[in-house]
Length: 389
Image (cartoon, rainbow, N blue to C red):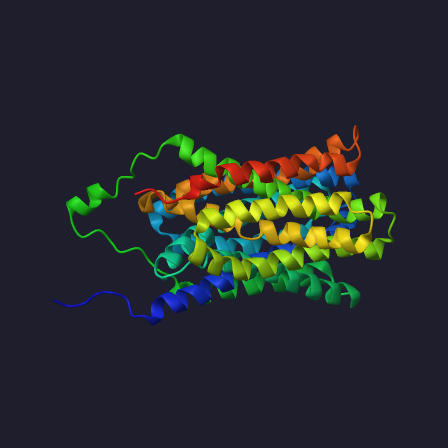
């Protein structure tokens, strides 16, 4: 009987291709972010209007995630991932063409939708690639997204400093997205086609208890809300709470981001040795300790160490949750992934706003008790990600 199993090199090539797509997605988002001030001025809108449009972008991304999850299960992750990558490349150019609030709004609806689509498709495919490996590799994919964002920050600073027009910069980003999305398609792992009617019948998704999916989603919500708090409030806390300069305050987010990226490269090996539940449990505990130190320390160096511990603790949790969601039912991994990613994404968007609301009533470091409590809840409910037979 002929052996139809894929060659050993195929999972490795798929891993590299998926790494590339994660980095590409982070780069595209990062290039949009660094151009936000320029685009805001070009569109002639206020900070308030921009904030509303950013919510539109987030809502559109959330819709894109839910739509794409089902499409990925029906048509295959690689196909949907490639199309989404191409459409991200086209849509990232659109904000550079915006001349007023409504054209920018339309541009962000498109960019948000397709970025959300790519987010779900590439995470679902990453789960497929991880199954072909004898050890966890999901966290490293997320680390590559962070690296893509860091490259975008450096490239964006360079092109802005050189006076390159926004449309040119974003067009170059878009072209890169299209070319790479198409080029890596051949290396992505396709699901085997059903061979007979029994196999077709077997492809009907199993009934997964809704409480399991919701629990994974709520854990993602808790950890991604905490991540969003660090993204938007770490530097402000150091500046206002400890009275530092703007440049010193920027080190708070820098220490968090560097530690999170490094932690994601290490988390896979920890998951392989101790299990994914241990990564979530002990990582969340470390994050809670780090946030407590960051928000209570009277000295800047100690606070920076706290933010670094916070990033290190959060680094591995979300990738493990996404893997658990994708493996609940291999025949419906896209739809299940979309639910968990979507609920987590709501936390990422809502966290900074919730903390901002609390900060009107209590000091900022007291408001940080919310993400700290959510990290402790993640410690308690971490066993929910243990694979079920």
